[in-house]
Image (cartoon, rainbow, N blue to C red):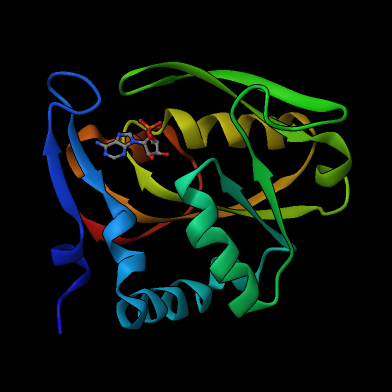
Length: 170
Ligand code: AMP
């Protein structure tokens, strides 16, 4: 059986020169390993202690929704511009390769008090930091952060003052 690491292909210079892109989409092509990963992430104390999961556009949705089903926890989403209807809470952030912003539906965020943040990958930490800032400014509790991959040399975790669990590190 392959390991999770073997399912993650690396693409050099994508989407920009100098970026070593880790493609997590290989994981969902192997249901057995995908399931093992989801069972492990779902059993985290961070998930257990949160009222709800907040997963991040777009690859975070793959893992966040599977964890939500497995752990029977509600899931809401943080999305890139122009994707969500209704009244939004929005914040800009810097990426390893550019700038973007994330929005959360106000009505969805108001439903729960404490959140576990789920994304596919932690690089510089700008994306997840943006979500923590939206949560903090709306008086919501961040229980912790779960990612499939953490790129250690980018030191994203230094930006984040919450517990972080990563399934794989590079
Ligand atoms: P960051 O805000 O720098 O932590 O970037 C995290 C977000 O950008 C994640 O949602 C990833 O999908 C994406 N990302 C950033 N760097 C990479 C990379 N080297 N390989 C794959 N995805 C990346």
